[in-house]
Amino acid sequence: MEQILSRTDGVPLFIEELTRTLLEDGPLREAADGSVLDGALPSLAIPTTLQASLAARLDLLGGAAKDVASIGAAIGREFSYELIAAISPLAPLDIDAALGRLTASGLVTRRGTPPLASYAFKHALVQDAAYVTMLRSQRRQLHADIASALIKHSSAQTESQPEIVAHHFAEAGLAREATDHWIKAARLAHARWANREAASFFERALRSLETLPETTATMEQAIDLRFDLKTSLLPLGQFGRILGYLREAEALAKRLGDAPRLCLASIHMCQTLGFTGNPLDAVKFGRHAHLLADSLGELSLRVAASLFLGTACFLTLHYAEAESLFLKVLELLEGELGFQQFSLAGFPAVSARSFLTRICTDQGKFERGIVHGDEGIRLAEAVDHPYSLATVCWCLADLLATRGELSRAVALLERGLTVAREWNLPFLAAGNSGSLGYAYARLGRAAEGLPLMEQALNVFENMGHRFAQALFLTPMGEVCVLAGRHTDALKFAGKALALARENGQRGGEAAALRLLGEASGRDGSPEQAEGYYREALALAKELDLRPLVARCHHGLGKLYLHAGRPDQAGEQLAAATTMYQDMDMRYWLEQANAELSRLPHLAADA
Image (cartoon, rainbow, N blue to C red; front, side, top):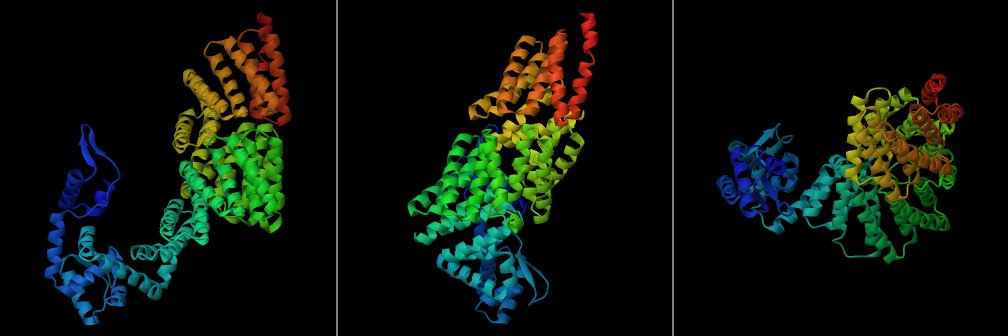
């Protein structure tokens, strides 16, 4: 529907004709509940009846007008007098007369006065009718002339919109020139964080490059373009497409025997596999990349390999190794090097600090984590990089929410969400909004929080981002408990447990077990709840996840309190309050102290 409307400008006759063409000759067929597309949508050509009518109108205007219309159609829906004059072999007076006839006919409109005038075809189908009257060889030559004229006479436009020149070189069959300009356009789009445009232009560059003879140089460039595509697609969360391009890059690098590019392929595979819920495979690629990067000695490779292996180790809860790798990144990037991006989606000095913040969150080392997070925000602001800023805001806010500093977390998350939405970063928008929903719910605003969390989960499921899903399933279940939706809480806890075990994420397994204990206790199954809590507690202690250990003690204490078992309740609540005090988790400490205050009454009743 969007393509039909864009081609017809809403003119009823054109809409009917194009739709009828698709139904009669194309892959669109009518079904009981609407229209169904079988196969790829073809380019929407003008129906024969309309084409004949429009072509006849152009013929009546004379050869010069028809030739000028053809040149204008090759330029685009809009074209300037200056560009027509630079390309057309007609004399200036003949060009003026031809444009006058086209304007008088109503097929073309004019703004301004020649030689500063600009013209536009009244409808897209008029442009097509003028274009299809030319032979293919004529079109190719005309597009080559337009590209050359743009470079010569419109250098400012060529620099700011190289995709226009790239299009004309592509239509002219000049693949080398088209490739170079698509890459320029992609880099400009990426610089202004227009990632969808950048990915589209990089893909066009890759398709154009693949029409050239295969040489070492073109194969190297084909690999690099796939890495560029990964960088543009990552903020969009399009991990399936990324994995496909990386596998192609890896195969090409092996054929070339290119060790640095093979190292980069493993680096990028490590990060992407970690995000898609394959942490063990991510570690395997990461270790290979790390060894290769150290042997090659190139700084950018060592930084990226350490960063992404650290990320994979974080996902598998090898925190000591992960922390060592992230600190190595910061060591490699001392001084001004911390302001370099090394062609990665985020600045590595910010990314390393973001993950160090998450490690400190899980281990209850909150003050150290806040130092890393604050420094990450300072650096992200200094380099004015939205992806890095939205990332570190999310990580630091999750630390604050875990500690119980919910108002501070909300302020950071609202900032991160604003940045992510403004710069079209769907993955980070979902992350910040999902965590914001959790903080809202903990502050008693569950009606606002639940929709944000549900939306975030849907985004991550559609992206195939299993790591992010695992981050939110358990908090989603917690919020359902707060809202009294115990059946939903059990559903989310079960899904979180299955996903964690499937992906070998033992920390996620412990958190899901604690949630199952809480939801089962509220659902009237105290024996089952106690079993879940005990299992979660043992695993959390083994992994040294101290905030989670404290919350398991707290949950068990509440369970025993409600079951009328004061001695066991006191033991568990005392353990929880001690840990909360050590970690300065005041929000949770107040709740545990309130429950402890009920113990004397419970003992007296007993």
